[in-house]
Image (cartoon, rainbow, N blue to C red):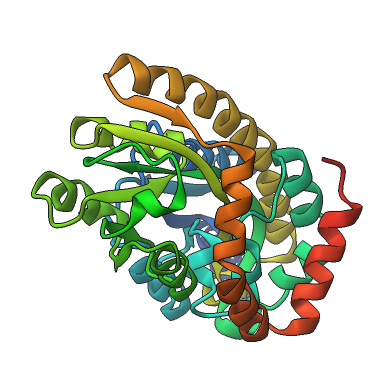
Length: 338
């Protein structure tokens, strides 16, 4: 009888120990580590937004989910990081809609030149039904879209001369994003478009491999282009949004609770990121003047002239993204507050 009790006790202890190991193992399994790569420096709103998102996820998970942010293209160019997310070797990034258009053609509609009148109007379109419908096309390409972030209105800088009218761009070698529409846009204005990743751009400007580039004020300042560019012309030719995306392979392994937690963090980080972008864009313009850049305003009449010169480019890309998509896009803009 004593032997039986001992055997039963030993069995009970083994079961308890096994249960403890299983609980500990489950707890360990719930710890998640992820990498968030950005292409721009620490002080740019893209990376500020990434750090805020990581901070919010960490707080909401009580430290169980740890997202490490790698800025300045440490993990590769936007296109390389996008590919890494699809392959499941990286978890988060925030590329431009122009970069995503290489994967999902409908994202190209957002870059149609001279479409948006204000940030407020852009917010309404991106956060509304049309923007969300485009976001929903990402899972079939191995990505999960969590939110639209802001890069801002793009403007033109160069080392040769002030751009007062479209014809002043003639012959300038202009770096563009690796996106066919942007290439056609600047070729259509008489320049010679040279596509390349933003992390290679400073060296190309410094060596005069290219004469010019186009980016929001925050990028021009954060990348210190004022050291190698003299003239800044306020073309406001396109509004550039970025998309907070996750790897679908990573996302599909998450519990429903963790997905909800990250979606909530994404919404909160978006409010922070957009405001940071707007605040810093205003400050960056003044800072660029202080650094010695010559800023000239493009008149509304000249913007209209540029728009007219680009009618064939716009028509071409309306067909590429889909006539119905373009129609819905412009309808969403018309309904949005300016």
